[in-house]
Amino acid sequence: QVHLVESGGGLVQPGASLRLSCAASGFTFSRYAMRWYRQAPGKERELVAHITTGGGSTMYAESVKGRFTISRDNSKNTVYLQMNSLKPEDTAVYYCYAGSASYDYWGQGTQVTVSS
Image 1 (tube, rainbow, N blue to C red):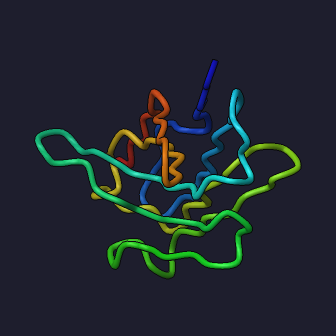
Image 2 (image 1 turned 180 degrees about the vertical axis):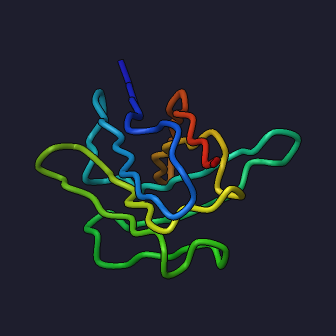
C-alpha cells in the first residue's frame, strides 16, 4: 500500500524556518519525480517545488525561489522542503506528490502557518 506521510509543519513567526519531510513507502521511490504543492484557504493548489528522480534537477515557483530548497534522499525514501525566511503568504497546507509516467500519489498534507 502506498503512503506519503508529511511532517514538520507548524506555527512560526515571519522570518523563521521550517523543514518539511515526506516519507514514502509502497512504491519504488527512486523512480518517481517528487513535488511539493501547497493550498491556501480559498485558493487553488499550486506547485511549489519539483525534483527529478535522481535529485539532479530542481525547479521552484517564483514566489519561493531563493527561500525554499527541495531535496531528496533515495536511501531513506524521503523528500524534504527546507523553507527559510517564511512569510505570512506562505501559510497553507503543504502536500507531497510523487509522479511517474504511469502513476501519481498524494500525501495527506501538513499545515504551515506563518503569523506574528
